[in-house]
Amino acid sequence: MAKHNNIEPTIGNFYHYHVVVEKLFELKQNEKLIIEVHGDLTKIRISDNIFLENIEIKHHKNFNELNPPNIDFWKTIKNWVENYTNYTDETSLILYTTSIPDKELNDFINKTKDEKLKLIISWKEKTTNEKILELFPKIFKSESILKSVLHKIKFDTEQKIYKDISNHIIDKYHSYFDTLDNHTIRTESIKYFIGEIIFALKDKENWEIDFEYFKKIKTDFIYKNKPESIKVEEDDLRDQENETNVYKYEIYDNPLYIKKLQEVKLSDAKIKIASRHKLRAFKFTNILRKNSFSFYDNKIKRCAETFTEKLEEIKSDFTYIEHDLDKNISNSNAVYDSAMNIDKLCLHDEDLTESFRKGYWHILADDEVQNIHWLIEDEK
Image (cartoon, rainbow, N blue to C red):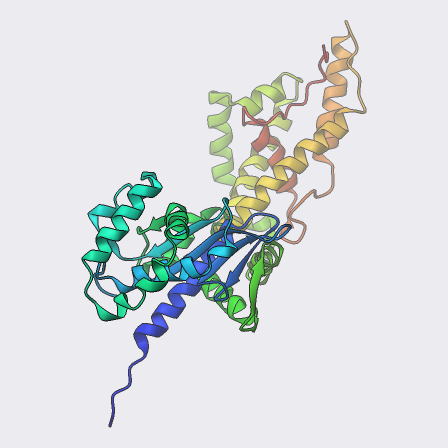
C-alpha cells in the first residue's frame, strides 16, 4: 500500500489561517484583508484600493534558515517582482516566516537600495539549485523594479511555530481575549475565527474580510459564549458573626467611607447597617466574579459609572445653603436616604438582594478615586 501523508502541507495551511486571524486583529477602519489572491495575504485601504501590506507566509516544521539556498526566499522575491504594479510608496512587502535569518540579513531594512541589490546579487552567485536558477530571469529582469521591491521588504522572522501560535495571538491581543471566560474558550474562539475565514471564501478571485465584518464576528463570539446569568439572593450573603467582627474593626480603623458617613452626622445605627451592606455587596461581587471573572468584572466596573451618574442626578435636586450647616447636613442625609432607596441600577438578572444596591455605594465611597460622597457642599 502506497504511503500518503499530507499532514505538513495541511499544518502549513492552518498556520496561514492563524496568521490571518492575527492580521485581522490589526485591521483599522477602512481596511480589509484579501486572502490568497494577490499573494498569501494582502492588507488594502478600501477607500482608494491602496496595497498597504503584501504578506508571504512561510511555515517550517523543523529548523530552516533564510539564506541563499532557500527556495522560499527566491520564490517570494519573484512573486513580488511580478506583482510590482500593484504597489505604491505606502506598500510594505513582508516575509512572515519561522525561518532563521542569515546574518547578512541583519539590519536589512536600514540598508540603502544599492546595498540591498548588491547583497541579492551576491546571493545569486552563491546559488546552484536548478529550481532557483529558473527564477532568476524573472527576478533580475529589471534592476530598477528589483531595487524598488527590495526597498519595501521587511523580514518578520520572530514567528511562533504552529503549536504556539494560538497562545501567541491570545497573549498579543489580550484586551479582547480577556473578555472570554477561560483559556479553553479563548482557544475555541481562534478556531471559530478560522471557520469564519474559510466561510468567507466566495471564489478564487474573491476571498476577503474587512474591519467591520471581523468586528461583528468578534462581538458575536462574545455574545454566544457569555456565561449564563446566575441569581444571588440575600440569604446567600448572610454571615452575622463575620459582619459584626468587620464592623468592630472598621469602627476602630475608621476607613474612608465611614468618615464620609460621619461628616453628614449619620447615626451609629445607620453606619452599622452601611457596614453590613458593604460587606454583603463585596460577597455578592465575589460570587459573580468566581462564576466568570472577566465577564462580571467588566459589568461591575460599568456599574460604578452608573452609580456615579445616579448620585449626580440625586444631588442636583439640592442646593448648598450658605451659613446654614444644619440645613446642608439635613439635605445631605436626604441625598443618602434617596441613594439607599433607589431601585436596582445594574445586574438586574443576577441581583435578587437588597444589599448590593445599598452596599455598592459604600464600596465606591471607600475608593479615593471615585467621587462618591453625600455631603452637600459649596460648588465654589
